[in-house]
Length: 324
Image 1 (cartoon, rainbow, N blue to C red):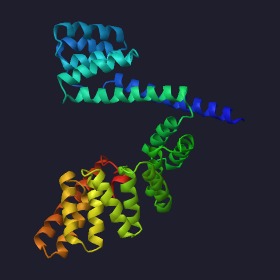
Image 2: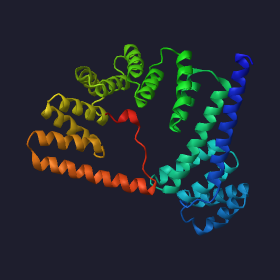
Image 3: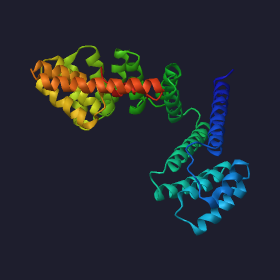
Image 4: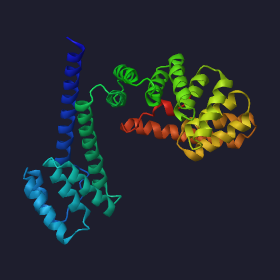
């Protein structure tokens, strides 16, 4: 098969997958959901029509109700769900945006808005695959999609295809750097990050990535140099502050380590590793009470993680944001 033939087959396969994902998402929004709030009594008929597949009737009833009650968020949700069922995704998005403006904390509004955005995202991906199947953006989106599913092998293939299409893309170089670092291929990661840094000296991702790689390799002077640059680029990065605090602690700059670690906690109080390092730093400074308090917080977060894991609700941290 020719290269062009393989490209067409590959694109068709991708479009089929995206189409199935799109259909599944749309069906999810029409089915009854436990997050659905109690609808107003007048909307009961419209809700029944929606669940029985009478989407036009449901949309008509919701629209009529909204003429008299334009501030009712639940009516907007019903209307949006009917519009989604009819394939009217853009009007549904506008309807849900109105509902969000009326009730920004409404769980139904947030739930269906998130799901609809996923549909719209899939549609844009479908369009991208159809119009530019071998563009670097297409390969980038596919790489990120594979990475989200923890399929690193295919993610790397797509990133490499993206890099061939655009060798000077800082985003792609950083993506490959992150992926290599996740797999502990530090030399390869440093190669990608260094190329990115050369193209964009004030690129935070490459600065942090280089620092984290050197920290893993125990090359502390170069780790500190890069992490200081990362902090200068993004002072609000808890991950960079944590990594820099770790580096300072390793070279005996304990007070500097405490400063960075406390700053990291202020930025993100749930970074458990920060408390572990802080307890160690306080112990070196002879601050026993503070060390015990930091260790207690570390143990508290550990218990919360264990509970979350048991319930199946714990989310995996993105490795690039978690220094060694």
